[in-house]
Image 1 (tube, rainbow, N blue to C red):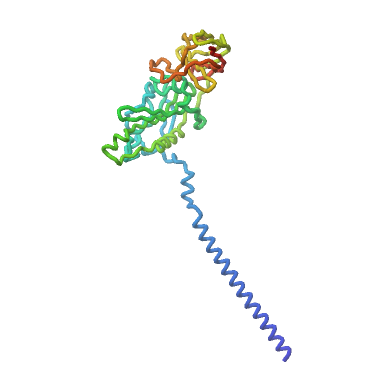
Image 2 (cartoon, rainbow, N blue to C red):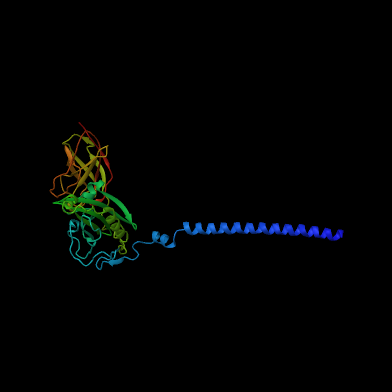
Length: 355
């Protein structure tokens, strides 16, 4: 009897422990299952959809149409909604003299409906001119890039050195904004422009108060994306004898003088297009002015002369006969002097204007 009682006691003890272990196991299992469900829900709630990630990194120009110029071989891509069928060019003065075989396309009129945007035109082509002329924004505005450096910036696109500028002008209730890229390489001038023609918002709202200002940023962003696809044909082996050599100033005599002093600059390759001789003077505070030397230089000439003026135009007007927009008064002090033929800057020399 004692043996049986002992066996029953141990059996009850073991069974009781097994029941407790079974309940603990069930509780642990339930807890793990709940944690799994919560984690699964959070994962699918927080995790971004694969399509949205793909859209953020996808090339926006992937589905665009490609254009290749049959004459000059350059290419670019543009949105499918641009109209390439029209042959009209609106407000593209910088394309005077451009080879007629060029790319032209228009944004649709409903690109920004309900705004004061009338028309936006994209043009790309080749102008057979020198480097200094390539930098010009308009033929009637001869050296905007070269003399007024605050109006352009140098940018590199696909390894190509462009000069970029934005120019605004308006008259009679019409406004034109030109976004322009110029590239001179392999003795070829490539020009790309976006011209946005809009109306005076105040005048338009007199007849339709709902008219809004068009989104310039969105328009220029699309144009920048077009320019980013621009490619030129493989460059031929350069003939160094045909490239424009760098201008060098070897001396300036005298090194100081008052207004009215005659000064001679000696050096090499100082003459620009058709013998033009443009000199630039920079004050210590960064203010600058330009003058044209007193004589045209024939090819190979090694010196030029000029007279220190009382004032200098802050913008090189060249042979345009246009009035100077502003002047730099020549005051006593030190000036850095350099030449700028063919869009290439020479070394600087110092000249002191005395009282």
